[in-house]
Length: 429
Image (cartoon, rainbow, N blue to C red; front, side, top):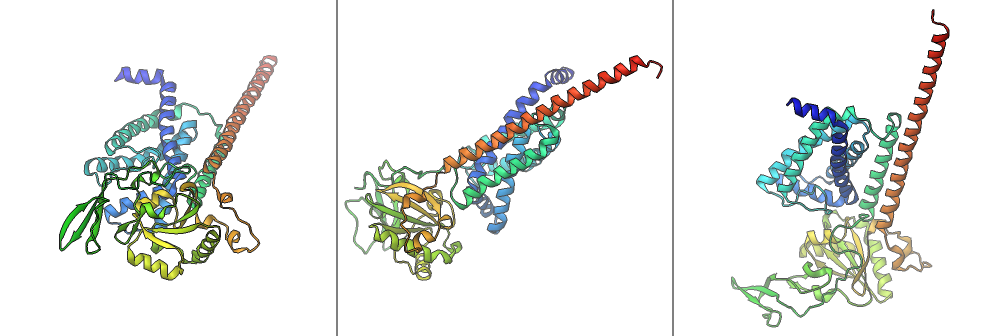
């Protein structure tokens, strides 16, 4: 034991900085991944709540998601730079007191396959998550003893500025991701991917139909008459595009290959939760629909609901566009938000964004000549700019802090020499 303590004392700076980098970077990446896609983290928390039978309170879940992801990012960055050497370790330690037992429960019970530790950026198993959290907890326990003994990069008097800068960065990427679309898209159906199936002739698909309590499989070339009821589709369409696993239903019929156009303009109106959709937006949706029809395109609404939900939306919105049902996980993966649009040209995704982020005057002003291309949202560009500004300001704080330390030391040494000179000249004093 004595040898271990001696080794820790001798190499404390190297060990502390190694753990700061590993643990801090882990929390920074985890926090940023969640902040970028706050909607995804909200859905994951709601998944936990459903497993535990907790009521689905979106406003509270939103605050939990925002606070947790910001705490991970801020705590990790403070540890990474050696700022708030006691507070950062204590804060991350409290997080691990919650996360370690939770990951152990997930590993044993496996109620959810993906814990959501790194959002959709990096999906790891529950066993790997538990092992990761054991290491992080042990590392934080070590840092709890030794971290305060090793100085950091940011001057102590400027650490409050670093905190403000850190929070500003977190709020910026979370705000844009929540209100527009995630700055980085880690999911399927990315911009530039085609939604047009390259093999719509059925391939190896089997269709299960039911009649008089009996179920039977049919292939695409031998479908039964209308007296049979569609149950499910087996297998996957052989496709190169992003729609390989996406199923659009019109009643009991799979119409995926029919509704996505391989030519011209098309807008997909995505509504993952029809009961949470703001009906005040129905007017602008209808205006956009008229606008795109005049350009030779169309809107199709993909709603995660049943036939009753489709009829409800059709009635309250006075929809003059086609409505279809989809799985909620599919529509949530394609785009984030209560109501969102995905713009296609020749079946290829050009952009995604929430309806609330679109300026209504672009389509309600008679003199406006709107091109759908001008609504393109370049999330990567915004992320690079915001991150570059944050890193640049952080480097300025570090350099300025180093300048203050050098200046302070010179002044201290100068005063020390002056006092020593005065003492030598007046030895009796």
